[in-house]
Length: 245
Length: 245
Image 1 (tube, helix red, strand yellow):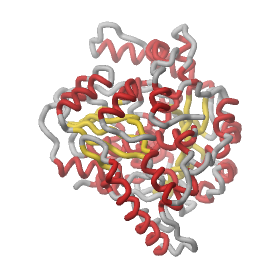
Image 2 (cartoon, rainbow over the protein chains, first blue to last red):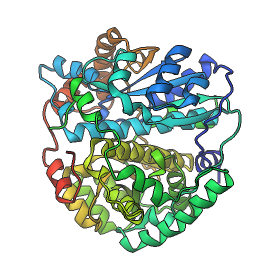
Image 3 (cartoon, rainbow over the protein chains, first blue to last red):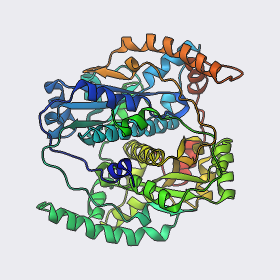
């Protein structure tokens, strides 16, 4: 089709990196693509913190629940939901910010962060680097706030490790596209057969990867989504001035 | 740098489209890139609804608060936060889903939706199409649920209109990169000067665009973020089985 489509359809989350550093020129180009990404109402409520220092990456690797690739890859970029920045604009307009206490604000910011994360992952991959997106930093939101010295009304939503790949990862199967693409309206009958097929595909994938205990998709999503696996998140955000009324 | 970086740094939200249709082959390639995008814990809690029917696009244009380009562009893709799909996987594992009632679930899904939206916008632009991301459909969440016949535990988070551009848009200025990129830790002193500079840049931008009432960034974010501009959203989601405890 074209090189960009080719790149995008071949996304794999890499978890094995060389320690070789990433040139500042490349890093700067990557971050500029995120900076130019669209933002709802031009609110620009996302910031980034670029971490190269090994001891900080080691700490993030621990806070993210033990993700050694964050310590190995030479760069980790954290995306910050930043209602501290917008609050200053609101104050300049002579008003007081309220949106950081609303579901709408959270959804707008998380969507924009996803847009920026994806943009920068694509940019990095187009430059020959490997990336892995990371949501695990939400497991210890307060500690991330402290580590990166984040001000009130902000938190670290997600991030990405990037660097030169050591052992390339395999691409993970997806649910059949019939469960992802609906035409004109949602087709509820498409879901069950797609899940049946995907459960088999994931078992086969993990067997190929020689994982000791291969798990179907239903089994893994069942394990994770049957409970609030980050129960402390809401209170940790509230403690930094962010809430959902 | 390279074509992908060039494309990404030149993002503009297009709001003027030809009525010329988009070939199914192109559309399919675009959607496949979104389908292959990364998903936290491989949960794949996002679905899409592709709308070509003019009367449905006309209705979405109205529900999104009056966005005529949704009716003009030949295709509108809605991204659905889909905890209906994951609930079926959880049930197969013999458990009951809880994550759709948690802040963590919402943040994970909205981030993934942003990743998919960005991936598909980049794919579309690489094929010579123009795109505009749309969050306005959250203004009438219940009506979108009804229109697209979305099942329980789902809602329409965001979307994109795409098509061939008629009158190319100008790229909107961004806050200086000093307010977006921090190194090693967050620098709170970078924000105020960046806002001052950006307020001037936005006024100049709107004057160039001959907008009758040019508005600084602080003024526009002040107007929007000083109140809950989508106060009904939370109850409309709750009515469809989604909540944040």
